[in-house]
Image 1 (cartoon, rainbow, N blue to C red):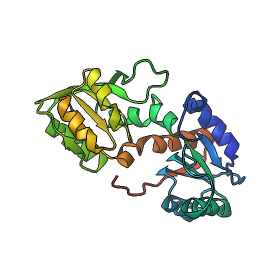
Image 2: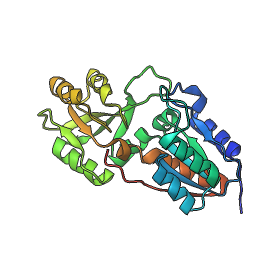
Image 3: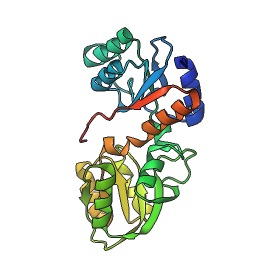
Length: 253
């Protein structure tokens, strides 16, 4: 049976995702070290208690997630819900590894790259062209009606998007950025896009989309960010020969 350390796993992921090159809202890499040899990992979008319970049920020694802990501005004490989560990890011998922006931006297994692939979009550039590691992309597709594109999102992501309509008959140039990137909509308009796909919507987003004459598809924060961490698990399994199991904890947001 192949066994690796948490540090070996993190070193590989750091290099593969160029994690040190990102200024992020949370620490990327090893967040909780249980100091237990790893033979099996669980991957998932968010390190919630349900995912921890799934890792315990699967006898995994590590969790690899997109949304981990220790976000900027949050209280530091390990008490309440946060304390329970970390206590469960430590008592169960499970390390926690998280990658946020590096997993959004990766050109091969990133959330945006794989979201575009799943929706038959061809990425042509970055939503913010001057970024070294762009968070968000511009893509093109065979001209499609907004209604048909909404149906495609529903089919591919297994949930209907919230669609703010512009009145356009066809879409061709589409910007996308997974998760809570609704405020990038103005940049999408500046780049001459017909539509913008992200995960979430705010009250202001509706008015901005209408006034900028842009179709907006809020396709779900969770739904648009399932891709990257699952793909990272597959890369890890191929690299080390350990088992990686993706667990999709239902989340309608």
